[in-house]
Image (tube, rainbow, N blue to C red):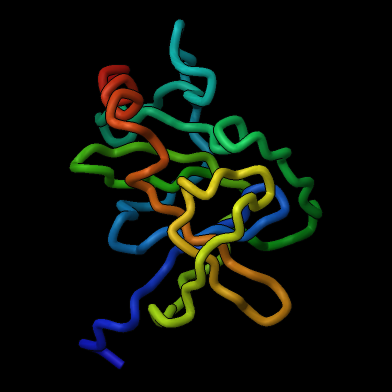
Length: 159
């Protein structure tokens, strides 16, 4: 249903045991795991930086930010295992580490429910909403609230 303002697409990914999604319009690209160079004195959740086609991209570890354990994967799966989603936050590219990319899903705005007060240790301030999918749910992240303006500036300055 093109042109329907009620529907939009989410890029979904696994982080720990949960399934998360971000608006596809905020995703620049998805890349395989790259070599990340650590940055001294960076915030605890900044893994470092990597070079993507001559552009320096800071990499955020959401496992550390949200205090989530990494999930162990079966070695024989064909799924994209681990990597980075490159987000475009206020015209700045920031990579986030993911455990597994899932798929792009179409979502209707009326499917989005308010998040519970505490969801898997993640504060509700980072969550735009929760979407029920079959027996599970999908946590929709608000990428603009992942970092306060001071944190975002510090991450951008790392480059």
